[in-house]
Length: 488
Ligand SMILES: [Ca+2]
Ligand SMILES: [Ca+2]
Image 1 (cartoon, helix red, strand yellow):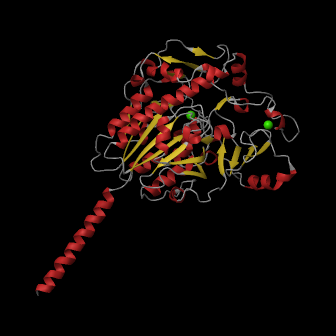
Image 2 (cartoon, helix red, strand yellow):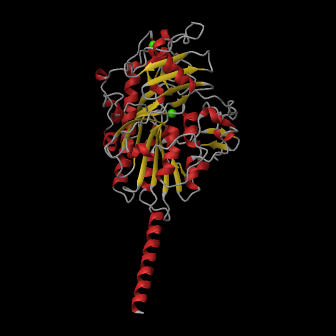
Image 3 (cartoon, helix red, strand yellow):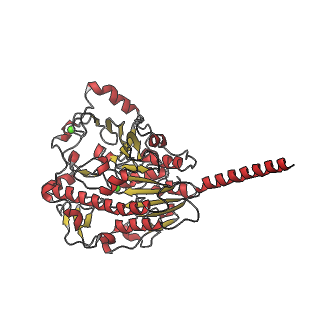
């Protein structure tokens, strides 16, 4: 009898232990810190895009994370890039091709469960500050994607987001940009009062709280180095003009990009490049971009330090990404857009505590792959609507072969594919020009091999992978800024 009781006691104890174990497991879901940096290209230490640029905090963070040196965006402009990665679907499957289309108005995108919603609907507490979704005016007010989060913070900052300047500098004032003006200058506000710092500090403060026992998904959007390049003077001072080397370009670079009729696909350098050239502002813009990157790095440094000393240091995934690259004169262009490497490649780092820390991977990934990857890392069910593929295996084994061609799109039917070695470009929405570059011999994409018969097979292979169906463009946003004042 005694023995039976003892056995029952032991079995009961084991069951209790098992139950405790499962409860513990469910309480130990990893948190997610999802950090977007607007318009950041590969000019950071861990990506090696420009050795002049100082990013000490990202350098340190790289030692605790995996640097993905071949990460690419779904589109080379903010709105469609962010819509694609947040809905998990390629632009040609949603019709969100430009900043003027709100994903909530696009028939093929509006009902998709976005990444933060997916977490929020499955036990996570979601919160956000700064730009994650591209913003759009609507009849009801400004849509900044606040509907996707449980908490959407807008911490107070100095007037002009700390952008009140001592002196504003700009390229060729009569130049019609059609985008944010190319402006730079030193803010009057100190670092601590500028917008990105204030938002990063808000994120840091959240790491002091708990979330009623729930894991969190916290998104932080850093605005710099997006234009205007307004940052405190000390960041300009880190780059004395006489030391700054500007990014390389070749004046005849477009000569080998031809339409099928043999005529040049590009008439000449991009209009913004010409304005910068006329104003002799290459150096000033290169320098102001570098200063803006170092400023963003400082804001992140404060957040990383708070995270490292918080209760969340060892149970939080940090995924840090740029929404697309940025030209600083390369390919005779400034800003974003286009389908070349400078715009398609993005900075990307992921920290999964205890996994492959300090590793570097050449695996080819797309920002759309973040959605399924985060679900798998956090033990959430896969979303069958995702176009991307999880790269958890690559995180676990950063040196494995991972080079399926990945897609970047700009506008309707203009696509680019890269497998990490070759880049193929097809302007299907234009006159059908093609480009092919071999990064092993030509990292700056100067020499177009599309019409070289030696590469015909490689080109044909890429061509066969182009999307077969391209959704019609989603509707343009018809609401102007002044049509409403109320925020959603
Ligand atoms: Ca952007
Ligand atoms: Ca060329």
